[in-house]
Image (cartoon, rainbow over all chains, first blue to last red):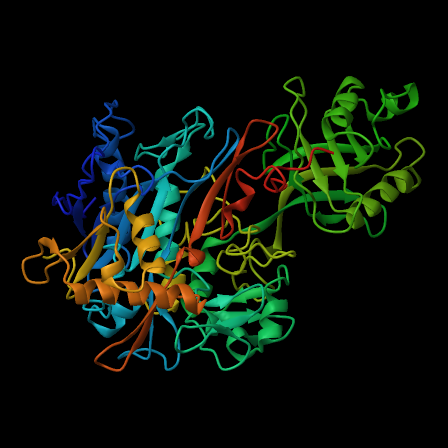
Length: 500
Length: 136
C-alpha cells in the first residue's frame, strides 16, 4: 500500500463533567497520494465516552495490529480513509467526524451505523450553476474549504464534510448478540459484520454517492436557501443530470417533482448515464446469469431468470442442472407416479400452500436431484428463504410467466421426441450474453429503484441485479473487495462523473 | 493544523449524567437568552486563535441559543444556512439525510446487511423485517 498513514493523536476537548469519565477526542490525518482525510472522533452522547479510546484489550486480527478495541477501531478508519485517499483527488483536506454510539438494536437486528455529507453548497467557483453539491466535492472543485469560518452549532463537528457513527454495542447481549464488527483488514469476516466494507460504503455516500437533496418520496428538491423541500423552484443535486429514466426518456434534471417521484419507483428502468460509469460498466458488469433451457418444444428453449435459495448447496454457474419433471405443489410426500417422474431429475413445483423447504425435502425424498420453485405471483424470481440442514439438492426459483412456459413444455415434451426416445426439457446454469446484469439495454448501469420505495436506499445505490456485486449496492455482500474501480467496481467512475 | 478553523465553537457542558450533545440541544431550544441558563450548566467556546476552550461570552451564548431556537422553530430540513464570501450558499444537513447500514438475521440464521435511510425496521417489532427472505 502506497498510502502513508500519519496518526496525530491530539487530545481535543476534555469535557469532564462531574463523575463521568473524560471524553477526550482523537484527531488523525491520513495522507494519500491524491487526497488527505482528517478524522475527528467524538463521544457517545449517551455515555460521554469515546469508543476510539476504549481500552478493552483485544487480540490483533486480520492484519489489524491494535491491541485495544479503540485502537483497532482507529486502524479501520485509517485503513478505509487510506483507500479513499488513494482514489479521490482533492487539494482540500476532507474532514470526517466519527463516533461510536448506542444505536438501535435488538437480538436479531441492528443499526450498524450511518454516514453522509454534513454540509452542502451551491454556486461556488467551478460548480454547475444552481446545483447542490456535498461539501467535500464542493471544496475540491472550488479549491478552498467553503465551510471553514462558518459558525459551528455547538457540537464541535458542525463544519465537517462527512458525519459518521457506528453502533458501539454491536455483538453485546441484546444487540445482535454474539455478532460484533469484524475489525480485521483482510476481508475474512466469516459470520461477523465486516466493518471495513461497511465503512467504505458509508464514506462513499458521504463523498457524494447519493441523490443528496432530493426527497425521493415526493420528488421535491431542496430550495436554494436550504430551508424547505419544494415542488417547483428548488435546486437539483449534482446527482440528477446523470439519472435517466428510460420510460420517460429524460433525466431527473428535466423532470417535474411528480415525475421524479414516479421514476424513483420504476424498477430496472432508471440508468446512470455519466460517461465514466458507463465506460466502466462495459468492462465490469457481466452477462446475466440464467437458467439455459434446452428442448425441442417450440417456444420453450432459451434463457430463464432464476434466483437462489438460502438452504441446500449453492448453485454453481456454469454447471449442468438436469432433466426437468413436473411435481405439482409438492407439499405432501410424492405419490408413486410423481416419485417415478422426478427420480433422478429436477422437480418443478409451484410456490404456495407450504414452505419451500417442505417441497424440496419431499422432492429429495422421491429421488430428485434438484428443484425449481415457480413463483405464484407476477414479479421477479423470488429469493427462497428457510432452513433445513438435511436438504442436499440445489434449488432455484423462476418467474411465474416463465415457469408457466416451462411446465407446459415439460408436459408437451414427450410428443416432440421419438417412439423410443421421448422428448425432454433440460436445463443448465449459464449466462445470457445478450443482457448485462445490472445494466439497461444500452448497457448503462442501473440505479436501484424498487417499488415500493425504500427511502434513502432508492436511487442512491446501484441496482441489486448488478453482477458481479458492487460496493454501492444497497446490500453489502460478503464477496466485495476494497477495489473501487473497473473491472471490479463502479464506485469511483460514478464519483468522477459528478466531479471527483 | 488546527482542528477547526471557524472563528468560534460554542460547546455547552452540563452536569453529571446529562449527555453533552443532548444538553446542548435542549438548552438551545428552550432558552431565549444567556441569563436564563441553569446554574449547573456551563457554556464554553473554543478560541479561534489558541484553539483552547474558554468560557463563552454572553454574546456567544446568545448566538448559540438564537441559532438553536431558530432551527427548532423553522421546521427546516437543514440546521444552518451559510453565505460564503465568494457568493456560494451552503447549508448544514441533519441526521435525516444520513444513509444507515442495518443488519438483520433471517430465520436461516444468516445475516443480511442493507443500506437504508429509515432505520426504524430495527428494534420495531411491528415492522416486517423485509430483508428476510420469504420461506413459502
